[in-house]
Structure formats: structure tokens, C-alpha cells
Amino acid sequence: MLARAAAIAGIGATEFSKDSGRTELRLAVEAVRAALDDAGLRSSDVDGLVTFTMDENAEIAVAREIGAGELTFLSRIGYGGGAACAVVQQAVLAVTAGIAETVVCYRALNERSGRRFGQATSPPGLDAGWHYPMGLATPAAMVALVAQRYLHDYGASTDDFGRVAVAARRYAATNPHAWFHGRPITLDDHRNSRPIADPLRLLDCCQESDGAVALVVTTAERARDLRQPPAVVCAAAQGSGPDQYVMTRYYRSPLAALPEMGVVGRQLWAQSGFAPDDVRTAVLYDHFTPYVLMQLEELGFCGRGEARHVVAEERLPINTHGGQLGEAYIHGMNGIAEAVRQVRGSAVNQIPGDGPVLVTAGTGVPTSGLILAA
Image (spheres, rainbow, N blue to C red):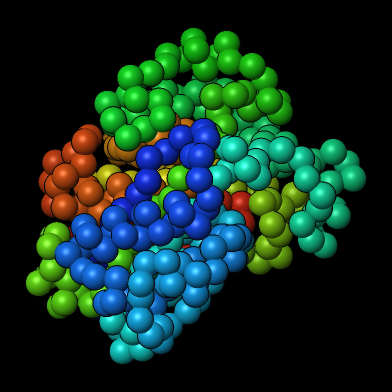
């Protein structure tokens, strides 16, 4: 991939709700049209589409509904939220290779009013056979074991998890598009929220949301002539750790770690030439609070077990839109949109400076990341 050769030129989203009242296809189309309008492009300009394997909206259906013409690039990425930044990587590869000129990445889901990811379901594949029979049938339960080991290994406390939630909700409280707009929480609120899977409490868990987000990717050169300031893709990476399983892995050492994010981080720093100290703000995939701490460590912002101090001392602004804990859970795509706003200088909770913005996708699964800058 050619670093800095492509850019995100448009972002679009529906409202974020608990009951959208419309189909996922309609949500996808609304978000795509909004992203194209944001970029100053027409539906007929679209010649590539990328989404998640979990998305129920066929690319050709989206293309028909928006009125796109011929498509020259189609792609899908697996592993749930781990796909978020990888769909952008696919789009970057397509436009820099000259396969397509205008690639739209999208994700639409009725994840509260429709299929609820937080509920136990039948095992999705062979890997789940190692833990579903033992009762580990929800994402919270799967993450809880790793979280408990993190507390044991590093002498952390559940208050350290709570501070992640408090920070996210503080940003969400000032974001008019966030579900929890105007509703900050305290550390006591976190302590008193109901247990979900020890040591996780309700406020350690992301939302279940209805909504859609779309992103328009084109070459950096072309993006500079469009309606919005471009968010240049300085780096884009995917990663999977050795002996990787879906959601988490209980037999690797150290257990309280996310090696797949380490794989991504090393690529991001190498591609971009940046280092953790350069990052102005980070948008970290926060489906569960403990994984925010582990990501900071894997990405090199601090040593193992030290991320709680980064959060407590507010050394790095994280998830300035409220994250999936406070804004919405759109499988990480709304986090990429926030990173673009930070680069443009149009975020509600704008962080000053001109340093790069780091974005990550789902953790515990094969994952991905981006570094964006002006």
C-alpha cells in the first residue's frame, strides 16, 4: 500500500437509535448518500463498494438503490468489528492500484431492534466449540475471563475499567449525535451498575445500536479538489496473532494481552513514520472497557499494566465522540468518522494540534487500524 496516496473524502451516517423503524438496506443507502453529499460527489461516481461479511446488504443492492453505475471493485472483510479499518484499507488498495476511483465503505445494522450481538446464540463456527459448552456464549462472558486475568496480573482494579467508561460518557454528553448526549456518569455510577459477567458491569459494555455509517475513499490528489478537507490515510493495517481464535484466546501467554493489535500497531508505525508520542488523539475500539487499556499497551503508548495511569492522568484524549460506550455501536465505523472530523477540525470535542489520529477496530478478533492526518 502507498502511504498517503489515498484519503477519506466523505463521511455520512444515519441517526443512532435503539429502534430505527426501517430496514438495514434503507439505513445503508441513507448513510452512503450522506457520505457522497459530504464529499460533493454523485452516486454515478461510485465504482467500488466494501463492507463487512456480517453486513446483510448486498453491494449490488446498495448500488441499485443509490443509482450507481458500473462497479469495478467489490470486497468484504470478516471477523465482525475487526473489519472496520480493514474496509478502508481495501478501498485504499483499490484506488491506489487504479482499480477504482471512488470506493464507498459502509456498515448498516439494526443491532438493537433486530439481531442483538449481546445475546447468546448458536455457535457461529468451529472455534466456538471450545467455550460455548462451558457457558461462554456471549461477548461479555468471553472478555470477562481475560479482564479478570488482567486485574490479577497487574494489580489493577475495576475502577480502572470504570474510568474508561466515565471518560467516554463525558465526551458523549457533549456530542449531540450520541445516544447518551447530556448523560455523563460518575465512577460511583459505574461501581453501582449491575453485574454482567464478573468483573464486567453494565457500564463496561458497549451499546446495542441501530444505524449506519459510510465513508468515501479516493486518491489523495483527487480528494483535495472535493468539498471537504481530506483525511489522508498515512497507514492502514490488518493483523492476526499466532494461534488466533475468534473473540479471544485462553491459552496464549500472556493471556491478558491482544497480540493481534500488536501486529497492527507495528505496521501502522512503520508505514506512517509516526510514533505513539506523535498521536494527538486516539479512537480505540471500546466494545468492553478492559480492551481499551490493553490496546494502549499493545500499541506502545505505555508498558504492560500501565494503561490505567494513561487514562487516569488523561495523557491521551480517547474516543472524543463518546465511543461505542457513549455514542453508538456501529461496529467501529462511527469511530473512523470521528477520526475524520478530528483531522478536518470539525469535531464537537475537537482536540487542538495537527498531529495524526489513530483509529482501531475490533479486538480479540483479527483486527485492523488506521492512522489519518491532514
